Image (cartoon, rainbow, N blue to C red; front, side):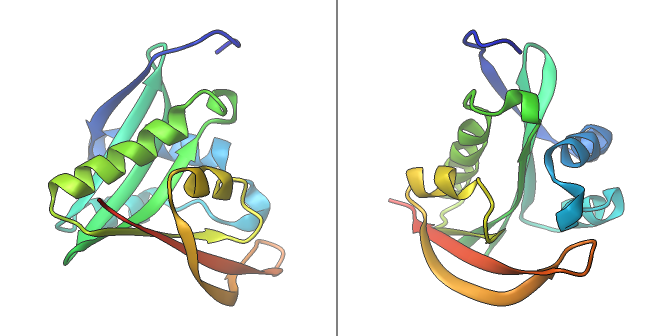
Length: 158
């Protein structure tokens, strides 16, 4: 994935994509924070009603994914990850907009997410209209035992 413009292709994912999802997570999430889910956690979530997975590919290779769920009239973005080599190429933005569009199609009025304090993804979320609505102090425990705050963001769907 060089510096040239690449087309981001999106498709609906499923259980058959969990090996790719796991590889992307391990590549994308810094192990010191312990944020990656296990394949069993992802599979368990995918089996629930209202949950969907979007896979993003660039040049025929899976480059990122988003996992989301609808509960009542809200959507929660559970996970969003892109391979480091695919960052700053529109992959995460395309995935986030795909989740918002799908949520809109499902009659959702609000999308929310939670992110570890200091996560660079906050810039993307703010750019896409999300605003900070809450904070959970010392919510995440990293692999070393260090605690990190969780920040909750939300945006209404117009």
